[in-house]
Length: 358
Image 1: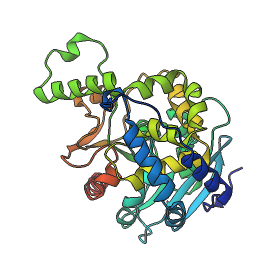
Image 2: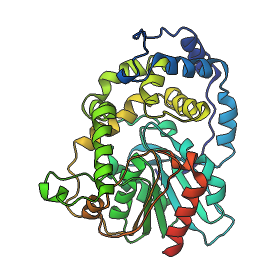
Image 3: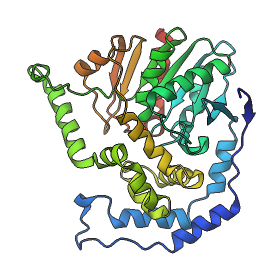
């Protein structure tokens, strides 16, 4: 079951017709007269996305743009895995495996394929349960199992020395790739390091002003924006019934973490979840992760952080508890959570500098 098969996206027109019909018949939620934005994603934003998705968005154009890149599927650990595989003109280029998160997809990395492929061979997979990898069919697909699958994928492609790059969920998975395959992974580059206070008051006794501000931001995020994590870690299937039946519902729920981004990027990601029917399985990733005790020992493969503005603010003292070989830590005053789309030049340069130093 190690065969690697060429793949092209070709969504049936009937599926697009059904989607258009559902969008046209959307029954929008009521809301308070003042908009009530502090209650969550406002109706006006969902209406904008639905109307653009229905009348302005061209799925076939996106489909063609993604099909312009070589794509493949293979089966790993009983699960279909879809990936882009773009080889550099440099035969001796270092391979990189780039991992997205939720509610993103391989679309996160489309803007950096051309500049990165000048120096690196690129493997950009859809996480099992996400996008064109299709729904997962059994339990257990957490970050650790995905990391083992990525190590197998890179071995199957013949890469004996490679780097791992990640954003969001990919920032959880990529360090684990280094942990499970340290003899082949030369380094890991992420845009967030999700290390949190342990509960020991001593950890907080001498915070710098910058660390204090980052901690306040973290507390704000979990108190105001953390509902998605709580629900998906506890009862993902309960919500999935609504999102699998309503593209407007999907726009509201997934859209909460796609704020401030252009409509084409947002709707393309929404459309991938809808058309591949991976709403439930993508949310189960959170449940699976919550059931698993993290490894007791820190990672040791060289690790780099590129932190961007308007995103999770990693705190180095906590990161160094979980990762013992942080060799690069840079922050930028541009971009946001989807740096590969919002600040591609800065991210590409940071990746080049880090892996070049290794």
